[in-house]
Image 1 (cartoon, rainbow, N blue to C red):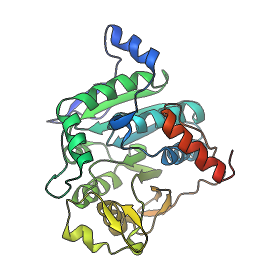
Image 2 (image 1 turned 90 degrees about the vertical axis):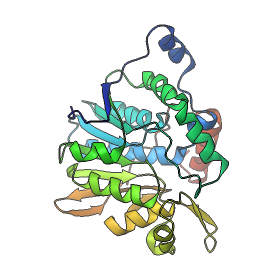
Image 3 (image 1 turned 45 degrees about the vertical axis):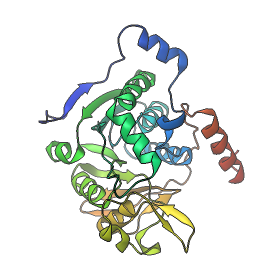
Length: 292
């Protein structure tokens, strides 16, 4: 287990006591509305594909997965399902998140940011996360480190994680810091990956992120595409062009170098925790691709 960190609340996840666990098991995970605002169902499939790839390459040994940014737990449940399905000896998921407001509303005034901050401030999202984690496969271990990633990541043992997933604060400085810290934690042959790379640095004027380092989203008019400039610029500066699928990006560590990740032949598993609307959208995507 990772060492204790000042300012971080580290615990092995357990189901809430009393009737809460029974309600959670009856109702299933909760990702409707604001609970599901941070995930894209198509990207979840490629996240599962990254675990599948690692399981093949690592010979099925237990995998250590670290995620930076958990929100209500959709990514953790996705990795848990992938470990249970593809890795014979399963593994452990470590979740790092402060579950505290973090958006600069003076730069990001959109109503969704205010709603997200309010849900973090009153504890709603963290409680939903705890309830949703009761649906992890029983054989997959789970650890929570509640705190800010810039304080926790530098204390973790180097080269200890097979897969690190970055989906925390999307402003440029935060993404740059998370990638810089995570690079040293990935084991040789492991995968560093993340969310919200809709466009890469060579496709846009990445200077917008330097000029507005707290900006969350921007619109590329020439491509008619919303994107996260902080993610675009930080990934481009630290890793260059990366392999990416529908906004999910991944690179494999080889010594001091980084190489493309191949997901050729990956099974297209549907995450079991998707709410109905997201499930319909995902099935539509798969049918258009001729996968189902």
